[in-house]
Amino acid sequence: MVATPPAAANKLHIEYESLGDPRQPTILLIMGLGMQLTGWPDDFCHGLVARGYRVVRFDNRDCGLSARAPGKKRANLLLAMAAAALGLPVRTPYTLEDMAGDAVGLMDKLGIERAHVVGASMGGMIAQVLAARFPQRVLSLTSIMSSSGNRKVSKPSKPARKVLLSRPADPKDPESVIEYMVHMFGVIGSPGYPATREELRQRVGHSVRRAYEPAGTARQLLAIIASGDRRKLLRTITAPTLVIHGASDPLVPLAAGRDTAQQIPGATLLVIDGMGHDLPDALLPRLVEAIDEHCRRSAPG
Image (cartoon, rainbow, N blue to C red; front, side, top):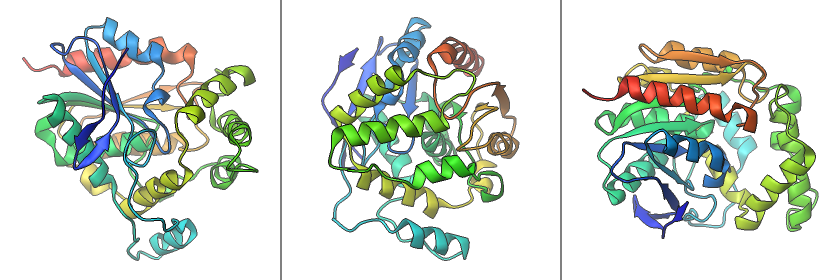
């Protein structure tokens, strides 16, 4: 793994890591809500490198070691959700389109003309916008456990909604934050491939020690809410697209994955039994295989 200094992408500092040979085709990984670049498991990244790719993963704005949005005003999520439900504009410091622009800016800084773009959850939404708005930069699109913004098919289960909207008992205490996040991933994780409590503590502890910015996560959620229904935009995507979704996802249900695949012309849907809203170790070889096959089919010439 090669740690690299932040890049100024879209006028923001973006923390990233580049793995593998820069002369090989690039896979750009975009992580989800509040998740850092470390949310992409090392074994997954190295598996793709072993298949002959350069892998670039990065912290989205307002997350990890990347730039924070200016201002101290807290995001009012309940007001934003009410406005969205009424079809009113949602005030937000940035949008998913801005975040897609960050990804393109990072590609510019690294001299990457075109990339295979892979996004998970909110990262899948950003990847979709990137593919629609910057088609000349995208060799292929892989959207994992994400949605089109169609609220009718994107409702989480009650336990998932409850844990998503809850907070640590003491947000200033790292141990309290770790306990909260272990519980959260226990709720939304893969029932067919459950991680042990100790495994979750190790992963979460590393993430919390690296960076923890709940206000940034709230602003990212505002960007999702403000983006609304993107089905019309998805219908303009021309990149070869693979949609991967867990059959047991309690946060973004399988219906959302099916809907995403239906909206993108020619998209292929891969449903994985027992998979929830995470990237369990046992499934990493299968995910690497599926993405590699998709990228090779999509390679030019």
